[in-house]
Length: 467
Ligand SMILES: [Zn+2]
Image (tube, rainbow, N blue to C red):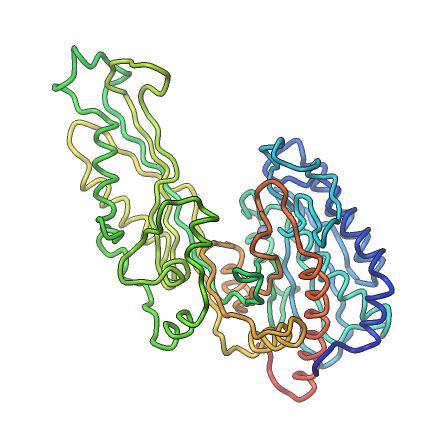
């Protein structure tokens, strides 16, 4: 195959206007999962999806309640003998502040200069829309899909994803499939097609240091009691050395080192470091010595202070010894690091290096396991072929620096390491003002999905496993 079925292509060309109108309609629903005042909007987005899925011809489309925001499920399972693919996306979006930086209201989306602009355009409503439209093209022209599809659309990805692991476990049998495809990632710098083969895990902690029962006079008590802010600074300075190497004993014990083949593959990906400086505004890049920038992002763990506070923060001076100081510290983890094990090591080290005269409390605020997929798994190879056939370039195989905690849960609960096939342009401004999706990524990506479903069906017909 080199292009998608001309019948599908003709249908897609004839329905572009309706497709874009529906995409904008979905974006108009302000389904911000983190803000309780938008809970009704999240339900509305879920119901909007169910009615679209019913209209297209999916079955068992339902808003499934959880202890938090609902999950949308639907399936179409009449492709006998063909593989069954579970597709994940999320219909919730990030909050929109700072509002004054948006060109127009974030939930008043528009299409201009080849961009769909609005909150959720790329992350992740646009990508859900692509799956709906690809399935619709098949059902409208052939009356059937080439593969069996199960759609799972979450409503809490941007706030916590606390309920989907429970839901996945409860509905395990119903979710049985040959492969899981998550469409919530994007292309490589320069908008080059890419397939994400791994995501980092996360360990999020808070350190609370207490000294005196309240702030005290730094003249009257300075020199005779320990200062929690000084103590916290000392603890933090022990966590990493000047080469960026994390000092927590055993921190790197379970890190899987890059193979020479992986190193070569990463080295072949062109990366413009000046562009990174432009994007970040940082005066220079900095990180663990001995590893390239892309290796540091995809294959190495990190430890970063996310926030630090305590004592007097106002204008002018106030001479106190603060009663408390706090820091939020998170680690991005890589295979095979386990957040629970690392938390114990981290906590022990913090308590060990803490100076006397203060009380130190270390808490875990959240975690997620890292996940990786083999570049040689049949469904990864098929996804790479589909991207090349439709976007005209072999995709880069990248490891993402971020985390999608549910990815590992699919692997764990369904025993299917998910493929991260996402289409967002890397300059999409996801989570930021003026989020956008390039119309080209959206349109060609729909063709990629059409191509992929036909290809996986062919593999099934030949008796090849896609799992
Ligand atoms: Zn997302």
